Length: 89
Image (cartoon, rainbow, N blue to C red; front, side, top):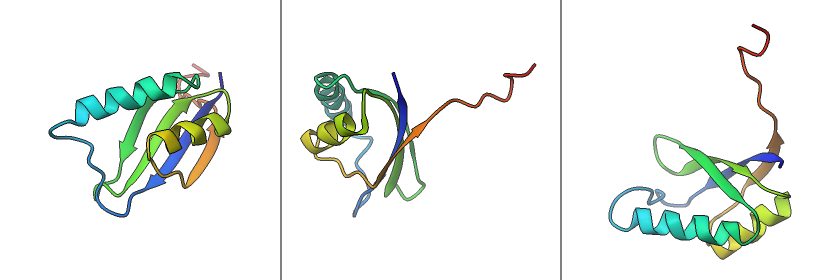
């Protein structure tokens, strides 16, 4: 399955923690599964206005479709491969 980095910019601080966040995240995971999209993890900027999310998905289109269903912005989707510093040891 291809792996992607999804960059998102939020106009206000993203509500990532606090009351209801766990339920929101689980709902996102469930909706993603309908398209074969798996959210691996995300990195969040200090101001919480930008996220860099790691996904396994069949295609960028599947990611865009689930983002729309989850009401999440998508700035850029980049297909990536793992580069491990210990690969050659």
